Amino acid sequence: MVTYKFHQYQVVGRALPSETDEHPKIYRMKLWATNEVRAKSKFWYFLRKLKKVKKSNGQMLAINEIFEKSPTKIKNYGIWLRYQSRTGYHNMYKEYRDTTLNGAVEQMYTEMASRHRVRHHCIQIIKTATIPAKLCKRESTKQFHNSKIKFPLVHRTVRPPTRKLKTTYKASRPNLFM
Amino acid sequence: PFKRYVEIGRVALVNYGKDYGKLVVIVDVIDQNRALVDAPDMVRTQMNFKRLSLTDITIDIKRVPKKKTLIAAMEAADVKNKWENSSWGRKLIVQKRRASLNDFDRFKLMLAKIKRAGLVKQELAKLKKQTTA
Image (cartoon, rainbow over all chains, first blue to last red; front, top):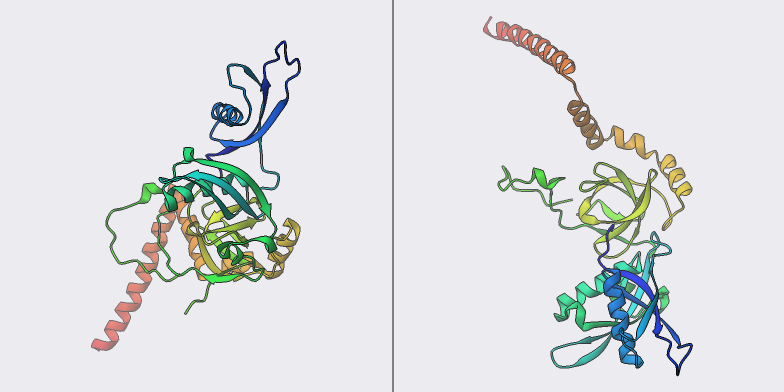
């Protein structure tokens, strides 16, 4: 995949120094947002919930994007999240197989939206981790842990190579066998 | 019932997108819809199976080989020649050649077609004469 919607940022901030506290504690957060502005806003949202500091009496020290270290290696990602459903808050643990963490997070958001109708602002990512293959819990990721994996593609849809060559009517029925 | 499987080492043709027309090797399977795909002249990327057409050619590699081992395995299995001699590969080469003709080439093609049709008609006339006679 080329463009990911969600980028991972490292945001560092602290409260403004005051007479009572010359050197306030510096806090760092790693979070996912679509752009830097949203990342900073998310940072203050979470920090407000943890400490008595707001954007108006705090300062942002650094915001850096974190890029994937090995985007050509397939990894199993476990994501712990907290989401708000129509009836209350729940915790969840989900597993994804992907090459990059941003891709896995994007998969998670789309899956939560489709399976549980949870929009992305109702989801908080608690923790993410790359899981080694023997610690994966979900059958749907464990079924790909096979070095001699082999399966046929059962249903072949014939597509024109560019959208320009798309036609509404075809002369003959397509052959769906690979 | 199935002859072409998605497996590590299967050679596939990209049929949609930026790398259209390239022969790539399936190097690993990410999940049900995506594969890690590699070719000697591109960075290893993930691709949806919808963008790939599997071919009959496979090469002998382990999961996710280094670029050098991949190229060596492709040479050992002689992918390029097998592809260019297969009927599918030959058709693609002919299509490319036809698309790249310039006007003079098309003129020469027209003359060659006329000549061939003339020879065929001569033989047909001979055969007709034989059957009526």
